[in-house]
Length: 250
Image (tube, rainbow, N blue to C red; front, side):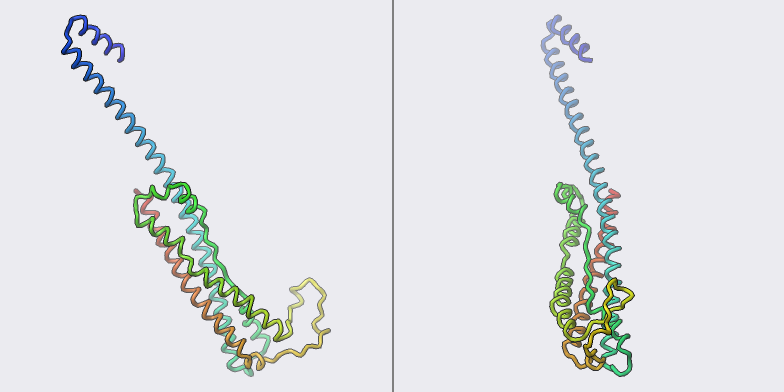
């Protein structure tokens, strides 16, 4: 093709057809410019296609992270419900301490020592953010939703409050309040509880201790708030998956 253009230019020059030569040269330059423009556009299109493919891949990984979060949230919600249910039963028992055996109460009351914690998976989101791929998302509403979801950490303050209250208030008091009985079948030592002469507290003693009653009530309050936060985050995760799937379609 280049040799053909060269022959045409030489023929026009040899025939002293300067005007036609200039017109032809301009046309040739125009064709070259058009070719370069097309090549640039093709390269840009190809790069955009590659970037979109990479973004789609990352968004699919993000949905997997969110599905892990949903599974984790369902797990902590279930555990949280179990704790609040047991603590609520403990309060019911302590209102009528003579109507229940102490062993049954202690089974329910054990939940006062329990805490829950949700750890979201942020690997894909952090990768999108650190690589700048987050800005390639066309839907601004999705970007806003992502930041809102991963900055939704109200539950963490409540989790910490529960952990601190349990560790710093409940357990130290209970360690001094009553002798700790342990199921020997679940221990690997040879601790004989009958060798100690401590007088065990009665269920009435538990019912008459305001710090125990308030400790149970405060734990129920915190775990109930935590349940609301977990459910809100769960709903947000499900909504976010739907938004991402819509983004991937386009």
